Length: 164
Length: 238
Image (cartoon, rainbow over all chains, first blue to last red; front, side, top):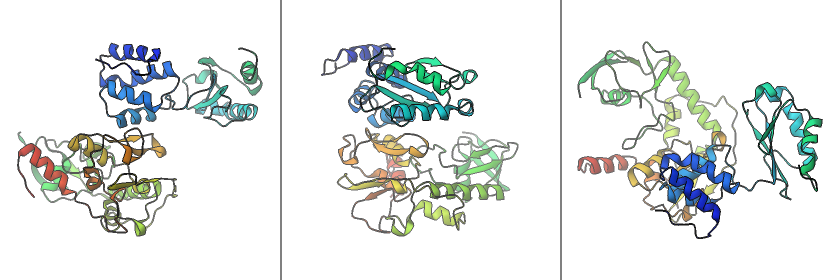
């Protein structure tokens, strides 16, 4: 049913298995995109085209859906990611200060990955944990009630030798 | 389909039950302005210009998608609706760089015509002046995102009539753009058959035939209705 990806990359096999589970149904596009992002870290054109072919969807539809959602990323992410919640509650509780602190500390802008590929700083409009405001998601782990000092403490190891 | 009686702007009308308010109004010479609607392709209710008031509901209904119902009382041109329509057109003008005087579609543009119809004499909103590109990599046609109103007529006509689905919309909000294939230059989009139906369907100067200069891009919007009638009813009404 599927033509294996010519690169022979094992991750495509895992992606194939996932698409097979959804019987290559076009409606499973978002689930498949999630899986692809999990496997590859980001979605590049080759990957989107591969998904389009296998789900028998037009490439423009796949690209349109993927770019509609902020969760999908099209450039490689850093080794570590820090997702700052900039929703209303977190903003009121000082998310802007957290953002300024990290931008200064890492010398990058929100939404960017540092040129050495060590870390990415991302923003989101509400991660749904307003009770813990202000919130950051550090490598997938939620940390709440943050202030700039606490946040810097948490990401201390990211910038250089130490492991977290 | 059984016949239904309703009132549009105080006029008693009978219409087949599967018709939309817009279709019923048109058949009875009641003009409801539209922008994203186009004969021959599906309706999406994207532009909100065809909103009407239906008695008993405080929500406005898009007439292109709302089916007629027995005893329905519809108003198509109240002061409130006129104000909203003007507002929508002003917002469209503020969102991109619609500069009629240098546009290929000047004089043949549905957005321009609509602005005249709704009596838009100035724009109350701040112009956004987004940075938009022009893509002329296709050998015959070009796309100027400055003039695009995201009505998705090109997307629908490419999908429903031509069957290629070269066009789609990427991004969201202010960042939305119509794209070909994987957001690549139109000339490199392999799914494009260069049929040109999207160009004919486009209400503004966003899609144009190359070589046309200011006010030269006349469009043949009846072409799609002709094709669809030919395909579905085997009647070639030219």
